[in-house]
Image (cartoon, rainbow, N blue to C red; front, top):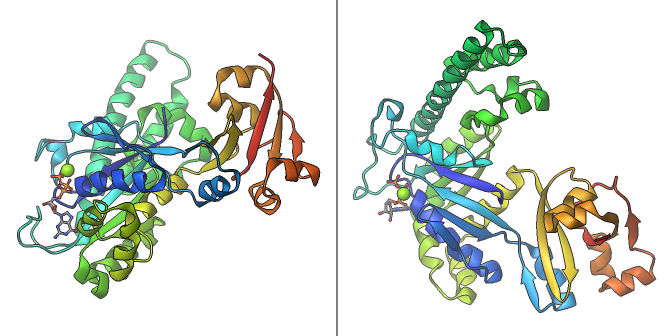
Length: 363
Ligand SMILES: Nc1nc2c(ncn2[C@@H]2O[C@H](COP(=O)(O)OP(=O)(O)OP(=O)(O)O)[C@@H](O)[C@H]2O)c(=O)[nH]1
Ligand SMILES: [Mg+2]
């Protein structure tokens, strides 16, 4: 399974508009077909300038970018946990995603209903946060009940998890986010299976219109919230970018520039989503095929090899590594080798972002 982001927000904020437009942003990068696996799930190529530069140099027959999965779900409303709107059961679809993209409406349009009257980013964000907290509390309560039952019949080793869950429960009851109070990886491992939404990394996306592009009235509000939460913010003129995404590939940047948009919001969402997950990219060039691969930061060489094929992890011998900058400087693997810039690395080597790698392995 790939790495995935779930798109959340109130109804009519532009989630599906952005989700659909992401398809073309992906195509723009690498002719990677947006594949809609079911109506709510799509796979998008990650824009990657380094991959493009490498391709210019080595002119491979095939260039394969790395990808991210996006999930589009229905809008959450206030009281969803009590069955309002479509309820909150559909949140089950995004329990397994790695990060959340929280779309906030920052455009005014009297033809498109805003569920709570006027556009109000702060209010909207608070509603979503609250609904996520309530959904998590339901899960925590069930787990506490189960563990307490187990404890009663004499099960061992429940105390630690119970006390951790109660700690998180109390923080959530106060309407706060428990992320900061957790004791790093150790705590996270214990509660990973619960897939709490409040613990997932979040990216705010302000969906603006042309007017707001100049005024920045709502954007200022949401920026303050994002700064306070320590969260990144991307702004996107969703409807316009969705229209531009329909244009031939060569014309898109020209239109964006004319509107005063320097970098497409769609591209930024994909890139920031990738960064949010603390992912890095390495590259392989085998059989005229240049390919980007995704791994979490801190991955050792054999595990990275295992991403390509499990045999390569099992039979791992060594990795021949050229850094991205060295490769670009030298122009080819051969030239880098001549200059002594191809390094032989063993099992302990931690892959660095941008490495170009040949794995040697026994079959
Ligand atoms: N004026 C304007 N309309 C927009 C913008 N983005 C989306 N819309 C419109 O708003 C309506 C709702 O957009 P969707 O993308 O379906 O919203 P959603 O968040 O997926 O809504 P739900 O699936 O109901 O939760 C559509 O008619 C869009 O065309 C925008 O930036 N400006
Ligand atoms: Mg939708």
